[in-house]
Amino acid sequence: MVAAGYARTYRANSVLTASPGQLVLMLYDGALKAIGLAREGFETVHEDPRRIEVINRQLLKAQAILAELQNGLNLEAGGEFAQTMHRLYDYHTHRLLEANLRKQVEPVIEVERLVRELREAWAQMLTQNDVSSVEQIRGVA
Image 1 (cartoon, one colour):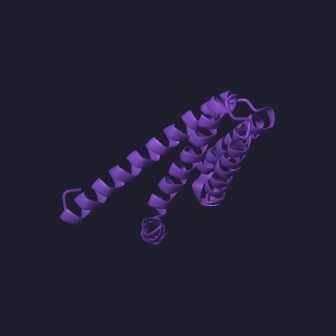
Image 2 (cartoon, rainbow, N blue to C red):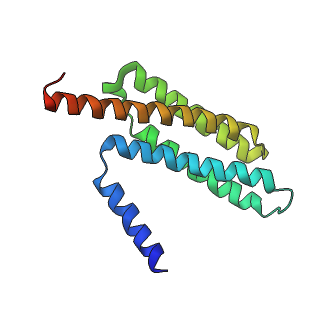
């Protein structure tokens, strides 16, 4: 029980001290975790019909995280890129809703792949920006 409290404190501190870019990465990770749990639920639903509740809960969680990512977009400053991301998040949310209503795993697999690609691109961008920042501080760039 004590370890759970430490883990909770660690997560809270991680969020409080993270940069905006790291927070986006954490949101992607949270969405992928929820989507993965929903996908696993579909794989075992024939063994335990109560898994439908887990699937529903995890898909709703993933949709909420995607909505948070979407709401964080600055459509004025972000221009066409932000508009495209807004539409992409709409698509992801719609496909997860479809998966939940029809109890189909295929849309979940599709969205998981797409969100993973976004997460990896975001992580790469953060890494490159960190390297650029270090180079600028050192006077290399």
